[in-house]
Amino acid sequence: MFLNEKYQKSLIPILIAFATGVLLTVAFLGLIPEAVEGVEGEPHIIMPFILGGILFFFIMEKIVIWRNCRNKECEVHSHASGPIILIGDSLHNLTDGIVIAAAFLTNPTNPNLGIVAGFTIIFHELAHETGDFGVLLHSGYSKKKAFVYNIISSSTTIPAAIISYFLLDSIAFIVPFLLAIAASSFIYIALSDLTPDLHQHTDIKYIVRQLAVIIIGILLMALLLSIGGH
Image (cartoon, rainbow, N blue to C red):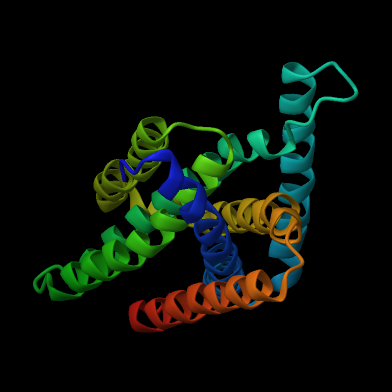
């Protein structure tokens, strides 16, 4: 993680491309289908939350830009993506905790399902958090801050799992909507903040490398999601 500036500059574009593939795959193949399934296959209930979430994060980003830059010539667009990705990731990890609790409660006498669910979530989160780390570096965070904030956003999983174990029946109904909002944050970051940076280089070498890394991110997350049954 603690690379010198030269290697960091070459690593960040790769992480941005990887994060783009990861975030879009998690949103479209993981969170949204799971949210729709959670409302008994009624997408018209979930889609307004995704649309509203995208609009909310657009407004949030505008506020961040407005507070940090009153000069019309100032360019801080990418710096606003950090708080958005942390919010979305916290919601995503919170729902992961609820999923782990539900897996343990499925068969209280046999914890194997819960253990498998926990390890699967940890495994796919490693790939996801790598992408998020790249987004935070891209947003202007230092390596230390990006690492610490990533840990903090991931820490919602354990408390959510413990609380959900005892209160799952009472809070299960909100899970699909949390998933929808988390998905909207990932879609917004990938398409509004990361993709424009990928278009800054038009050299065919860069384009091929970016596309290859995006596809790697997509395939890796699709594989992990299929293994985890997300």
